[in-house]
Image (cartoon, rainbow, N blue to C red; front, side, top):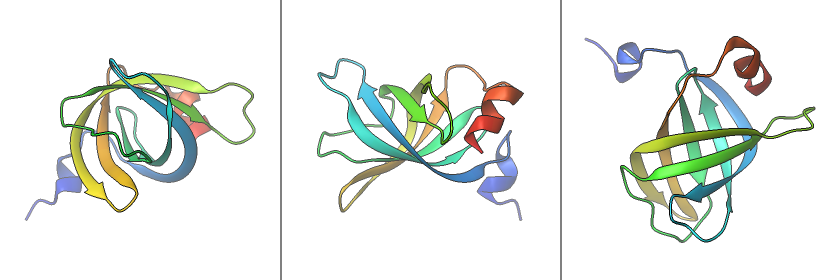
Length: 106
């Protein structure tokens, strides 16, 4: 039996990275935590009361430890569930991380 993980194109790596996000058309950046990362996607906990819907475009800045600059990405929310203090969801990136950037996030 295939699991969902078996169907992924890229392996996901667990993380706990601080970040901020801005929904397309949004007015302000809000806090998020990147829970896992792959070459083409992110698992994200969005710390917000703002409604986030599947299909929303999102801009995310990730702050890797020991890096001076944030890593900025654009993606689309592929799945989303509401949790106690916000939402948890999967974001498909518009472009893949290269090896150098991916290594900074792991």
